[in-house]
Image (cartoon, rainbow, N blue to C red; front, side, top):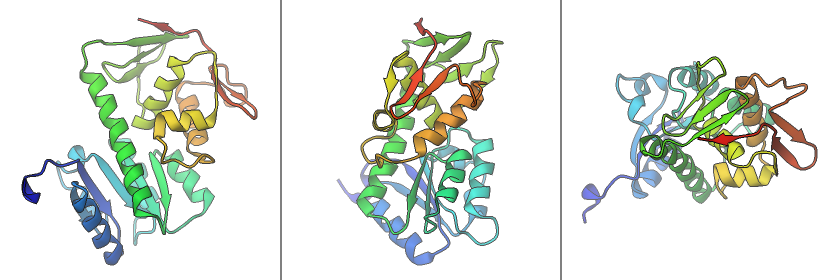
Amino acid sequence: MTEDSRPSNGTVAIVEDDPGIRDLLQILLTREGFEVLAFAGSAGLEKAGLLERLDCLILDLMLPGEDGLEICQRLRARLPRLPILIVTAKDDPIDRIIGLEIGADDYLAKPFNKRELLARLRSVIRRTRDLTAAASAETGDNFRFDGWLLRLGARDLLNPAGESVTLTTSEFDLLHALVLHPRRVLSRELLIDWTRGRSAMPVDRVIDVQMSRLRRKLADDPREPAIIRTIRGDGYLFAPAVVRC
């Protein structure tokens, strides 16, 4: 099979203003079987019809003009389930937390090992495809808890009033893991492994940040959460009874 005729592992866009890094990433991902689109900024990225067909966006934070955080926030509002992997030379925990708060699925600091980049990229894409496969399956598994309804087939969450609540891919993945194991203490390490794969760092704050976002969407009081309880030193516990239907 020739290189041109090999099936693609997915379509990935890179937004990176450093031409050397941008070219290296494009060469690396192309060799790994991805269709790669590379841009110095967000202008070319947002051409009509391009974003909707992406399997993942690799986004640098330190861009001239509009920075990566602003781009991430705007794209997340428009496309809640677009997988976004932030890559940046700024290894500041505050920037990392802000990036996750506004909806990035993962975060990788430069300089990074190419194997780690590939592992995280594949993990993000795999989780998204798993959810897409669940949406197209005919089983239609639903989970009810405290008046809420999580529907795997439709890939959505309905509040007690029957209104749809938008979840990112990572938030949906995390809630799915919780409803599968109600009233059981789940460690951060276990949740990271289930939702992000073994490429994640054990001390990663991603789960904590995404749990905070998920609580807000569930209207769970962060001061005294009743749905997702924090068990200090151990992890999290999903408190409601869950009925699978």
